[in-house]
Image (cartoon, rainbow, N blue to C red):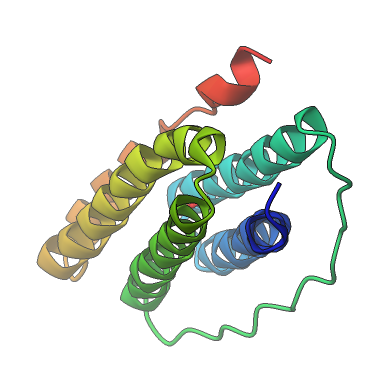
Length: 171
Ligand code: FEO
């Protein structure tokens, strides 16, 4: 495997684990705010991000590469209203989409068609991640100032259940 592609794949594990950490910090904030549905949403999001890291880990191991676990930064997010974590999530997902695209570009340049195929799942997943994050932002902007509507949003987020991502389910 091309050295740059390897480095980027290995670094992506750390970025996905940081995403899990970040979303856990959002869940903690919402738990403190009494919005346990939003907390549930972000704890499930955190579990999915850990899974994303595991998918990269498996790909490296399946291709005979060693896995290097690097340090994960502390999320330093303090929030002054219910909208801010949702906006931060959208911004973060756009950043992650960029990092996936960077790996894809490196794989293309290295003619690493296997890695490009592997990344296809993440390219679709990132579209879903950004769509979900955008939906959370727009609904909070529209309804967040109304107590009854906020209650309903929280109930809706409470209904989210964890599902194993397909690349791991078939592993
Ligand atoms: Fe692993 Fe939310 O992207």
